[in-house]
Structures are given as structure tokens and as C-alpha cells.
Image (cartoon, rainbow, N blue to C red):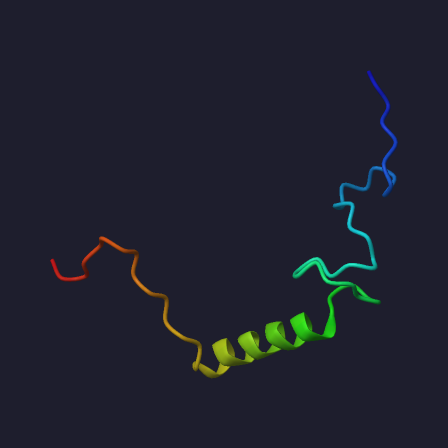
Length: 65
């Protein structure tokens, strides 16, 4: 059995630097940058209120059968 050194001591969590936003990859002082946090909040609110856009059908598939 080979022992590997990991930055997170084998916790199973991904090795993500706290200086980078995991969503967009831009520099961030905390986990998710303010711009991504605002986008996520807005999307969650739109889903909750029912104003989220509907998913588009995949190309080549017709809805009428």
C-alpha cells in the first residue's frame, strides 16, 4: 500500500485553494466570490418565485407526437 500526502489530509474534499472562487476561477478572499454568490442567490430566488426560464428542448427532438 502506498501512502500519498494530500493537502487536505485525506478528508476526501477537493483540493481547492481558498484564494480562488470554485465557480468562476477568479481570485476571491473567501470561498465563492461576491459576483458568483449574487448570481446563485438570484437564480435560487427566481426558481422559488417561479420566474426561472424554462429549459429549452434538445435540438432534433420534437414535442409533438
